[in-house]
Figure 1 (cartoon, rainbow, N blue to C red):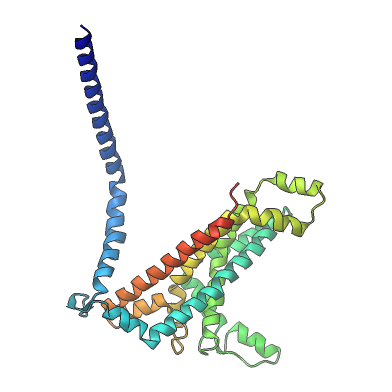
Figure 2: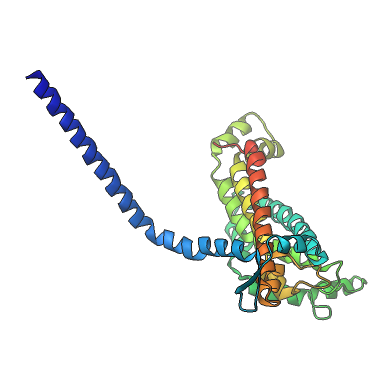
Length: 312
């Protein structure tokens, strides 16, 4: 009798495990069905272009992008030996150094001001964030008029104070800085809103406790605001860095990579190689190099920067 009971229990256990396995498989396939639209979209617009880019980087192509000759790593070696690409890489790094700290510091300053509880502060919040609603093309046209050598307001202001006009977009010494200034202005709206949201999420009791202890404004800013805002700052720095390396629209509208390739950033160089010179292999190799640069910088930032992030 005991042996039959044990046998029945073992059969019941086996049946239960089979049912549980079927349920897990059913849940897995249901999950796949829910994810199928995302998988299809990512495969078509992300995974396939990435694999195709890696494939094309090892070939020479004809004008229609069809691979013709396998050249291995020659595209990469030719890129790094090209003075144009070296200039493009240098300009991209300078552009990132100009725009990322500038946009974050100005946005942080404006967010701290806009976080104060003052009458009519909503008007200033709207003004500070308004650039986020302007397209890159419209903003570039606006700055194109500002930078115009004769009709531009900037040169007219310089002439009022007795200074000579500057070729903002035509002088190699000023072109990259001019594009950087316009880019900072375009990026302020997004970074401002994110930082303002981070400031408003800080618990007010921290400031109340500091006020009871007699702490000053700058002490609270240094000891409370910045540490508690560090997760938001980390996010903003990461996103702004990636966007800076991928800048294209204002370069195409304002300078088209000139003068003398001073504003020929890597993304615009990729565009020129692929869609103007029809060198899809070289363009794909540059795209891979840009991807690796962004990947390495992001990994280093996560390894080093996240240590100083203070989560509540």
